[in-house]
Image 1: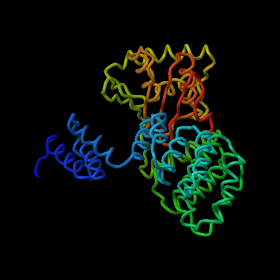
Image 2: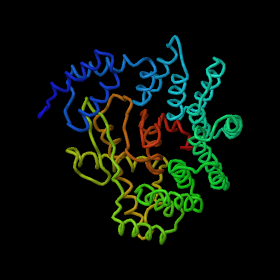
Image 3: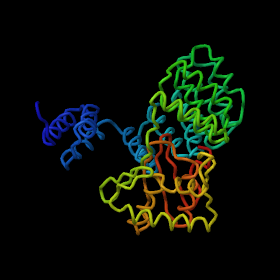
Length: 390
Protein backbone atom coordinates (compact mmCIF):
# COMPACT_ATOMS: atom_id res chain seq x y z
CA UNK A 1 0.00 0.00 0.00
CA UNK A 2 1.41 3.44 -0.88
CA UNK A 3 -0.25 4.96 2.19
CA UNK A 4 -1.41 3.35 5.42
CA UNK A 5 -3.74 4.88 8.00
CA UNK A 6 -4.95 3.76 11.41
CA UNK A 7 -7.87 1.87 9.84
CA UNK A 8 -5.62 -0.26 7.62
CA UNK A 9 -3.27 -1.00 10.54
CA UNK A 10 -6.19 -1.93 12.80
CA UNK A 11 -7.62 -4.24 10.12
CA UNK A 12 -4.31 -6.06 9.67
CA UNK A 13 -3.75 -6.45 13.43
CA UNK A 14 -7.33 -7.70 13.84
CA UNK A 15 -6.91 -10.22 11.03
CA UNK A 16 -3.77 -11.65 12.60
CA UNK A 17 -5.37 -11.79 16.06
CA UNK A 18 -8.53 -13.51 14.79
CA UNK A 19 -6.58 -16.10 12.83
CA UNK A 20 -4.37 -17.32 15.65
CA UNK A 21 -1.25 -15.32 14.72
CA UNK A 22 -0.84 -13.51 18.02
CA UNK A 23 2.89 -12.87 17.63
CA UNK A 24 2.37 -11.29 14.19
CA UNK A 25 -0.44 -9.12 15.58
CA UNK A 26 1.82 -7.80 18.35
CA UNK A 27 4.68 -7.24 15.87
CA UNK A 28 2.35 -5.14 13.69
CA UNK A 29 1.18 -3.21 16.73
CA UNK A 30 4.78 -2.35 17.65
CA UNK A 31 5.53 -1.30 14.07
CA UNK A 32 2.39 0.84 13.97
CA UNK A 33 3.58 2.76 17.02
CA UNK A 34 7.31 2.95 16.35
CA UNK A 35 7.50 3.33 12.57
CA UNK A 36 4.24 4.97 11.57
CA UNK A 37 3.57 6.78 14.90
CA UNK A 38 -0.19 6.14 14.71
CA UNK A 39 -2.26 6.34 17.88
CA UNK A 40 -4.16 3.06 18.45
CA UNK A 41 -7.95 3.33 18.65
CA UNK A 42 -10.36 1.21 20.71
CA UNK A 43 -10.71 -1.46 18.00
CA UNK A 44 -6.94 -1.81 17.70
CA UNK A 45 -6.46 -2.18 21.45
CA UNK A 46 -9.18 -4.84 21.64
CA UNK A 47 -7.39 -6.77 18.89
CA UNK A 48 -4.11 -6.50 20.80
CA UNK A 49 -5.73 -7.79 23.99
CA UNK A 50 -7.21 -10.69 22.04
CA UNK A 51 -3.78 -11.41 20.54
CA UNK A 52 -2.13 -11.52 23.97
CA UNK A 53 -4.86 -13.77 25.36
CA UNK A 54 -4.45 -16.17 22.44
CA UNK A 55 -0.77 -16.67 23.26
CA UNK A 56 -1.46 -18.35 26.58
CA UNK A 57 -1.50 -17.54 30.30
CA UNK A 58 2.29 -17.26 30.55
CA UNK A 59 2.12 -14.16 28.33
CA UNK A 60 -0.20 -12.52 30.84
CA UNK A 61 2.25 -13.38 33.61
CA UNK A 62 5.02 -11.74 31.57
CA UNK A 63 2.91 -8.75 30.48
CA UNK A 64 1.80 -7.83 34.00
CA UNK A 65 5.38 -8.14 35.25
CA UNK A 66 6.77 -5.95 32.45
CA UNK A 67 4.12 -3.33 33.23
CA UNK A 68 5.18 -3.19 36.87
CA UNK A 69 2.17 -5.08 38.27
CA UNK A 70 4.02 -8.02 39.76
CA UNK A 71 1.17 -8.88 42.16
CA UNK A 72 -1.20 -9.33 39.20
CA UNK A 73 1.49 -11.33 37.45
CA UNK A 74 1.73 -13.74 40.36
CA UNK A 75 -2.05 -13.96 40.68
CA UNK A 76 -2.30 -15.20 37.08
CA UNK A 77 0.59 -17.60 37.66
CA UNK A 78 -0.97 -19.19 40.74
CA UNK A 79 -4.34 -19.55 38.98
CA UNK A 80 -2.83 -21.52 36.08
CA UNK A 81 -3.96 -25.17 36.08
CA UNK A 82 -0.71 -26.35 34.49
CA UNK A 83 2.80 -24.87 34.40
CA UNK A 84 5.81 -25.75 32.25
CA UNK A 85 9.43 -24.59 32.43
CA UNK A 86 8.63 -21.45 30.41
CA UNK A 87 5.88 -20.44 32.85
CA UNK A 88 8.10 -20.98 35.89
CA UNK A 89 10.94 -19.02 34.25
CA UNK A 90 8.72 -16.03 33.49
CA UNK A 91 7.40 -15.94 37.06
CA UNK A 92 10.82 -16.33 38.74
CA UNK A 93 12.42 -13.74 36.44
CA UNK A 94 9.58 -11.33 37.13
CA UNK A 95 10.06 -11.59 40.89
CA UNK A 96 13.84 -11.20 40.49
CA UNK A 97 13.70 -8.00 38.41
CA UNK A 98 11.19 -6.51 40.85
CA UNK A 99 13.54 -7.04 43.78
CA UNK A 100 11.40 -9.71 45.43
CA UNK A 101 14.30 -12.09 45.81
CA UNK A 102 13.03 -14.14 48.75
CA UNK A 103 9.86 -14.95 46.82
CA UNK A 104 11.85 -15.81 43.68
CA UNK A 105 14.00 -18.20 45.68
CA UNK A 106 10.94 -19.84 47.24
CA UNK A 107 9.31 -20.19 43.84
CA UNK A 108 12.47 -21.87 42.58
CA UNK A 109 12.13 -24.42 45.41
CA UNK A 110 8.47 -24.93 44.48
CA UNK A 111 9.49 -25.49 40.86
CA UNK A 112 11.89 -28.27 41.85
CA UNK A 113 9.25 -29.85 44.09
CA UNK A 114 6.83 -29.87 41.14
CA UNK A 115 9.40 -31.95 39.23
CA UNK A 116 9.81 -29.42 36.43
CA UNK A 117 13.46 -29.43 35.33
CA UNK A 118 15.10 -25.96 35.59
CA UNK A 119 17.14 -24.76 32.61
CA UNK A 120 19.87 -22.13 32.15
CA UNK A 121 17.30 -19.30 32.11
CA UNK A 122 15.94 -20.47 35.46
CA UNK A 123 19.38 -20.55 37.05
CA UNK A 124 20.30 -17.12 35.68
CA UNK A 125 17.12 -15.62 37.14
CA UNK A 126 17.71 -17.22 40.55
CA UNK A 127 21.32 -16.02 40.66
CA UNK A 128 20.14 -12.49 39.88
CA UNK A 129 17.64 -12.77 42.74
CA UNK A 130 20.34 -14.02 45.11
CA UNK A 131 22.78 -11.23 44.23
CA UNK A 132 20.18 -8.52 44.74
CA UNK A 133 19.25 -9.89 48.17
CA UNK A 134 22.79 -10.62 49.33
CA UNK A 135 22.01 -14.34 49.56
CA UNK A 136 25.66 -15.38 49.31
CA UNK A 137 25.55 -19.02 50.37
CA UNK A 138 22.39 -19.72 48.38
CA UNK A 139 23.92 -18.24 45.24
CA UNK A 140 27.15 -20.18 45.65
CA UNK A 141 25.23 -23.41 46.23
CA UNK A 142 23.19 -22.95 43.05
CA UNK A 143 26.25 -22.16 40.96
CA UNK A 144 28.22 -25.14 42.24
CA UNK A 145 25.26 -27.45 41.61
CA UNK A 146 24.96 -26.54 37.93
CA UNK A 147 28.45 -25.84 36.65
CA UNK A 148 29.18 -29.54 36.00
CA UNK A 149 25.84 -30.36 34.42
CA UNK A 150 25.61 -27.94 31.47
CA UNK A 151 27.59 -27.54 28.28
CA UNK A 152 29.45 -24.24 28.01
CA UNK A 153 27.20 -22.54 25.47
CA UNK A 154 24.28 -23.05 27.88
CA UNK A 155 26.30 -21.76 30.82
CA UNK A 156 27.77 -18.63 29.25
CA UNK A 157 24.92 -16.35 30.32
CA UNK A 158 25.13 -17.84 33.81
CA UNK A 159 28.86 -17.07 33.87
CA UNK A 160 28.07 -13.38 33.35
CA UNK A 161 25.57 -13.39 36.21
CA UNK A 162 28.00 -15.24 38.49
CA UNK A 163 30.87 -12.83 37.73
CA UNK A 164 28.54 -9.97 38.68
CA UNK A 165 27.72 -11.85 41.88
CA UNK A 166 31.44 -12.05 42.72
CA UNK A 167 31.92 -8.32 42.11
CA UNK A 168 29.02 -7.47 44.38
CA UNK A 169 30.68 -9.53 47.09
CA UNK A 170 33.89 -7.54 46.58
CA UNK A 171 35.78 -10.53 45.18
CA UNK A 172 38.82 -9.66 43.07
CA UNK A 173 38.75 -13.09 41.39
CA UNK A 174 35.74 -12.10 39.26
CA UNK A 175 37.96 -11.09 36.33
CA UNK A 176 40.10 -14.22 36.61
CA UNK A 177 36.95 -16.32 36.68
CA UNK A 178 35.73 -14.88 33.37
CA UNK A 179 39.20 -15.21 31.82
CA UNK A 180 39.28 -18.92 32.62
CA UNK A 181 35.98 -19.77 30.93
CA UNK A 182 36.92 -22.52 28.40
CA UNK A 183 35.14 -20.76 25.51
CA UNK A 184 35.71 -17.12 24.65
CA UNK A 185 33.37 -14.86 26.68
CA UNK A 186 31.19 -12.62 24.51
CA UNK A 187 30.57 -8.90 24.88
CA UNK A 188 27.47 -9.50 27.02
CA UNK A 189 29.53 -11.25 29.71
CA UNK A 190 32.22 -8.53 29.73
CA UNK A 191 29.65 -5.72 29.75
CA UNK A 192 27.82 -7.36 32.64
CA UNK A 193 31.09 -7.51 34.55
CA UNK A 194 31.93 -3.89 33.65
CA UNK A 195 28.56 -2.64 34.86
CA UNK A 196 28.91 -4.46 38.17
CA UNK A 197 32.44 -3.09 38.66
CA UNK A 198 31.25 0.46 38.06
CA UNK A 199 28.32 0.11 40.47
CA UNK A 200 30.64 -1.15 43.22
CA UNK A 201 33.64 1.13 42.51
CA UNK A 202 36.05 -1.67 41.50
CA UNK A 203 37.99 0.60 39.15
CA UNK A 204 40.84 -1.83 38.44
CA UNK A 205 38.49 -4.61 37.36
CA UNK A 206 36.41 -2.10 35.39
CA UNK A 207 39.46 -1.04 33.36
CA UNK A 208 40.34 -4.67 32.60
CA UNK A 209 36.77 -5.53 31.57
CA UNK A 210 36.54 -2.44 29.40
CA UNK A 211 39.81 -3.42 27.70
CA UNK A 212 38.36 -6.80 26.77
CA UNK A 213 35.19 -5.15 25.51
CA UNK A 214 37.23 -2.74 23.39
CA UNK A 215 38.89 -5.72 21.69
CA UNK A 216 35.47 -7.13 20.77
CA UNK A 217 33.83 -3.86 19.71
CA UNK A 218 35.70 -0.52 20.07
CA UNK A 219 32.68 1.60 19.14
CA UNK A 220 30.20 0.78 21.89
CA UNK A 221 29.07 4.08 23.41
CA UNK A 222 27.88 2.71 26.74
CA UNK A 223 31.28 1.32 27.69
CA UNK A 224 32.94 4.75 27.47
CA UNK A 225 30.15 6.25 29.56
CA UNK A 226 30.38 3.50 32.19
CA UNK A 227 34.13 3.86 32.64
CA UNK A 228 33.84 7.66 32.79
CA UNK A 229 31.26 7.21 35.54
CA UNK A 230 33.58 4.81 37.37
CA UNK A 231 36.45 7.33 37.37
CA UNK A 232 34.17 10.02 38.80
CA UNK A 233 32.90 7.64 41.47
CA UNK A 234 36.40 7.14 42.91
CA UNK A 235 37.56 10.73 42.41
CA UNK A 236 39.91 10.14 39.45
CA UNK A 237 38.96 13.38 37.75
CA UNK A 238 41.88 13.52 35.32
CA UNK A 239 41.05 10.05 34.03
CA UNK A 240 37.37 11.03 33.75
CA UNK A 241 38.33 14.14 31.76
CA UNK A 242 40.58 12.06 29.49
CA UNK A 243 37.74 9.64 28.82
CA UNK A 244 35.44 12.52 27.92
CA UNK A 245 38.04 13.92 25.52
CA UNK A 246 38.39 10.49 23.94
CA UNK A 247 34.62 10.31 23.49
CA UNK A 248 34.64 13.78 21.92
CA UNK A 249 37.46 12.89 19.52
CA UNK A 250 35.58 9.80 18.40
CA UNK A 251 32.29 11.73 18.21
CA UNK A 252 30.70 9.56 20.85
CA UNK A 253 27.93 11.29 22.77
CA UNK A 254 26.17 10.17 25.92
CA UNK A 255 22.48 9.62 25.29
CA UNK A 256 20.34 11.98 27.35
CA UNK A 257 18.39 10.56 30.25
CA UNK A 258 14.63 10.80 29.99
CA UNK A 259 11.68 9.59 32.03
CA UNK A 260 8.09 8.80 31.06
CA UNK A 261 5.00 8.96 33.23
CA UNK A 262 1.33 8.35 32.44
CA UNK A 263 -1.31 10.91 33.43
CA UNK A 264 -4.94 10.39 32.37
CA UNK A 265 -4.00 8.17 29.42
CA UNK A 266 -1.39 10.66 28.17
CA UNK A 267 2.35 9.96 28.28
CA UNK A 268 4.47 12.83 29.61
CA UNK A 269 8.19 12.87 28.83
CA UNK A 270 10.85 14.60 30.90
CA UNK A 271 14.43 15.09 29.75
CA UNK A 272 17.18 15.89 32.24
CA UNK A 273 17.87 19.60 32.35
CA UNK A 274 15.30 20.59 29.72
CA UNK A 275 12.41 23.05 30.09
CA UNK A 276 10.11 21.85 27.31
CA UNK A 277 7.16 20.61 29.39
CA UNK A 278 4.12 22.98 29.42
CA UNK A 279 4.07 22.92 33.24
CA UNK A 280 7.82 23.34 33.50
CA UNK A 281 7.83 26.37 35.84
CA UNK A 282 5.33 24.86 38.29
CA UNK A 283 7.16 21.53 38.24
CA UNK A 284 10.54 23.11 38.95
CA UNK A 285 9.17 25.35 41.69
CA UNK A 286 7.54 22.36 43.38
CA UNK A 287 10.69 20.25 42.96
CA UNK A 288 12.76 22.90 44.71
CA UNK A 289 10.37 22.94 47.67
CA UNK A 290 10.29 19.11 47.74
CA UNK A 291 14.09 18.91 47.93
CA UNK A 292 14.19 21.54 50.69
CA UNK A 293 11.62 19.57 52.68
CA UNK A 294 13.47 16.27 52.14
CA UNK A 295 16.73 17.79 53.36
CA UNK A 296 15.04 18.54 56.67
CA UNK A 297 14.23 14.81 56.88
CA UNK A 298 17.78 13.63 56.21
CA UNK A 299 18.13 13.66 52.41
CA UNK A 300 21.62 14.70 51.26
CA UNK A 301 22.30 15.12 47.51
CA UNK A 302 25.05 12.69 46.43
CA UNK A 303 27.35 14.85 44.34
CA UNK A 304 30.53 12.74 44.47
CA UNK A 305 30.30 11.57 40.85
CA UNK A 306 30.04 15.06 39.33
CA UNK A 307 33.09 16.92 38.06
CA UNK A 308 35.31 18.16 40.87
CA UNK A 309 35.80 21.62 39.40
CA UNK A 310 32.11 22.50 39.72
CA UNK A 311 30.98 24.34 42.83
CA UNK A 312 28.93 22.27 45.27
CA UNK A 313 25.87 24.47 44.78
CA UNK A 314 26.04 23.94 41.02
CA UNK A 315 26.47 20.19 41.49
CA UNK A 316 23.29 20.04 43.56
CA UNK A 317 21.48 22.15 40.95
CA UNK A 318 22.54 19.71 38.20
CA UNK A 319 21.26 16.75 40.22
CA UNK A 320 17.99 18.50 41.00
CA UNK A 321 16.78 18.41 37.41
CA UNK A 322 17.38 14.77 36.58
CA UNK A 323 14.43 13.52 34.56
CA UNK A 324 13.04 11.12 37.19
CA UNK A 325 12.92 13.92 39.78
CA UNK A 326 10.99 16.12 37.33
CA UNK A 327 8.58 13.24 36.68
CA UNK A 328 7.96 12.70 40.41
CA UNK A 329 7.36 16.42 40.95
CA UNK A 330 4.85 16.34 38.08
CA UNK A 331 3.08 13.40 39.73
CA UNK A 332 2.88 15.16 43.11
CA UNK A 333 1.60 18.27 41.34
CA UNK A 334 -1.17 16.43 39.47
CA UNK A 335 -2.09 13.36 41.52
CA UNK A 336 -3.65 14.16 44.88
CA UNK A 337 -5.36 10.83 45.49
CA UNK A 338 -2.34 8.92 46.72
CA UNK A 339 -2.32 6.55 43.74
CA UNK A 340 0.82 4.53 42.97
CA UNK A 341 3.20 6.58 40.84
CA UNK A 342 4.66 4.57 37.96
CA UNK A 343 7.46 5.83 35.74
CA UNK A 344 10.06 4.61 33.28
CA UNK A 345 13.71 5.69 32.98
CA UNK A 346 15.69 4.91 29.81
CA UNK A 347 19.01 4.49 31.63
CA UNK A 348 20.00 3.18 35.05
CA UNK A 349 18.79 5.34 37.92
CA UNK A 350 21.66 7.11 39.69
CA UNK A 351 22.37 6.72 43.42
CA UNK A 352 21.21 10.24 44.22
CA UNK A 353 17.85 9.81 42.47
CA UNK A 354 17.45 6.45 44.18
CA UNK A 355 17.95 8.13 47.55
CA UNK A 356 15.55 10.91 46.51
CA UNK A 357 12.83 8.37 45.67
CA UNK A 358 13.17 6.66 49.04
CA UNK A 359 12.76 9.95 50.88
CA UNK A 360 9.78 11.07 48.74
CA UNK A 361 8.07 7.73 49.32
CA UNK A 362 8.57 8.10 53.07
CA UNK A 363 7.81 11.81 53.56
CA UNK A 364 4.85 11.98 51.13
CA UNK A 365 3.60 8.44 51.86
CA UNK A 366 3.59 7.49 48.19
CA UNK A 367 4.04 4.13 46.50
CA UNK A 368 6.54 4.68 43.66
CA UNK A 369 7.52 2.21 40.94
CA UNK A 370 10.43 3.13 38.66
CA UNK A 371 11.43 0.93 35.74
CA UNK A 372 15.01 1.71 34.74
CA UNK A 373 17.33 0.03 32.24
CA UNK A 374 17.85 -3.04 34.42
CA UNK A 375 14.95 -3.59 36.79
CA UNK A 376 11.89 -2.32 38.64
CA UNK A 377 12.40 -0.35 41.85
CA UNK A 378 9.41 -0.41 44.22
CA UNK A 379 9.57 2.29 46.90
CA UNK A 380 7.14 1.95 49.81
CA UNK A 381 7.33 4.15 52.91
CA UNK A 382 11.03 4.64 52.27
CA UNK A 383 12.82 1.37 51.47
CA UNK A 384 13.31 0.07 47.93
CA UNK A 385 12.46 -3.50 47.02
CA UNK A 386 16.10 -3.97 45.98
CA UNK A 387 17.38 -3.04 49.45
CA UNK A 388 20.23 -1.04 47.82
CA UNK A 389 21.74 -4.18 46.26
CA UNK A 390 20.74 -3.20 42.70
